[in-house]
Amino acid sequence: MKFKSLISLLMALVIAPAFSNVASAAMTLKVAVGDPEESEQGFVAKAFKAYVEEKSKGEIKVETFFGGALGDESESFRNVQKGTLPFAVGGIANLVPFDKRLGLLTLPYLFSNLDEVVVGTNGKPAEILNGYATKVGFRILTWTYTDFRFISNSQRPITKMEDIKGLKFRVPQSAVLIEAYKAFGGSPTPISWAETFTALQQGVVDGQCYGYIGFKAMKFNEAKQKYLTEVHYTYQLQPLVMSERVYKKMSKENQALMIEAGKVAQAAVLEYQINEAGAAKADLIAAGLVVSQLEDEEKWKKAAFDIVWPEMAEFVGGEDAINAYLEACGKPKWQK
Figure 1 (cartoon, helix red, strand yellow):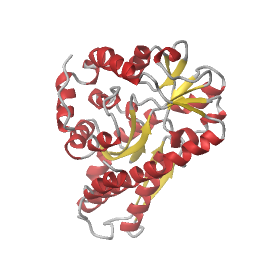
Figure 2 (figure 1 turned 135 degrees about the vertical axis):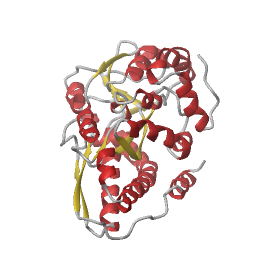
Figure 3 (figure 1 turned 120 degrees about the horizontal axis):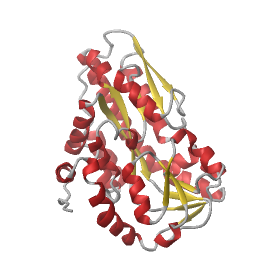
Figure 4 (figure 1 turned 90 degrees about the horizontal axis):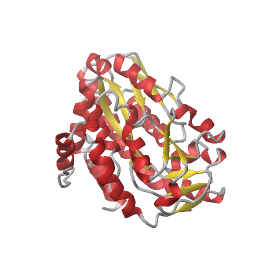
């Protein structure tokens, strides 16, 4: 599927307006963003803010706080669940502790390409994921597309699985990603996102994983990250979530506005990711980043399906939950 078709698909899924142009009551809503303003997360927050404020004619104000200004992503999600914070944007791994079935999205090689990612975050697949989230206090408004989690490190190029051995990598607090790195031969170390730059700079770990726009926004090239490999083991999805408690207190018109603003932001960030990732890559290469491709990615896939999926299936809800999602995505069922 061509990129323009992907964007058209998302725009077609934006619901028809069901709210009046004037909000029923003035309010100010805060959005916590884990990444810097220049990231895809930052882009989503600003797109959401612009749409809400425009359609409410300024009656609803949205305040954005970037770079973990309101706490790290885990803390922000906890506050959203409690209803003390209306919105937060963060990595999917930080939502998994609230409902393990959301960990489906962290299974390595779940998605082969961007087409599959878009299918898996819209329509019935998105309804399944949002159903899990709403039961534990979150409403997923937007899936932020932030590219595959390319592996970077300070020591050497990685072009085959053997090259990863002996290297320490920062990973989020995700059991699935930890097991994936072990299966690939690396040494995973869970470190909070807020502490990642310092850990890289001080040599606590050798590397991390992120897409080009986020890598540039976090200035990881200034934290000894000289080598990057375009491995496609997982696509980084970062939901913009709303507190279900806050949502239920809103008028139906404002509820509809929140949902539509989320869909508009999702379509906008897809276009942003497609258009800007290449430019970010070029800038990083010009600044000295060495980019490599894998010579044996099929070997990585085999390790994922033979080792990680069977070992982590129960952790993400079991075979039935995995297959319900795969079926919704139009994929064949999986068996241990």
